[in-house]
Length: 123
Image 1: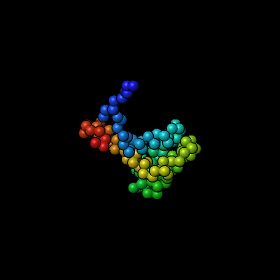
Image 2: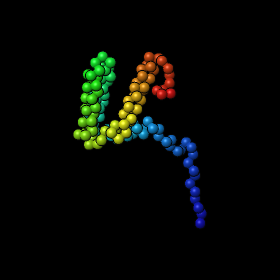
Image 3: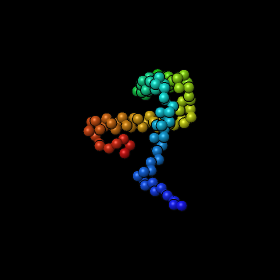
Image 4: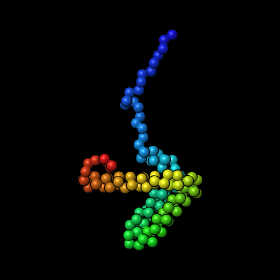
């Protein structure tokens, strides 16, 4: 009886373990599959939150109200369209880590467009 052995996978054949940020992004995509919920986040909630951040130093109460409104819109998307619990309830830091990552990537992209630096965001 001959025994066949399969060769051990080489280092290049083994998929690298996903980073924490990649796992967070995968969870985000899982939690935002409904296109209406996605629009309520990207097209409505995030812009309102951005305005809240800009307005807050000048009109703190209005900034707070806008920030609360942005979350109310996004949570409505989860409860009504996705029928799931918003990520912030399960993993409180994830939305802020993701937001900071997006902001860093935008700044790095603008920097590359303007000719500053040649590296990737976060490197």
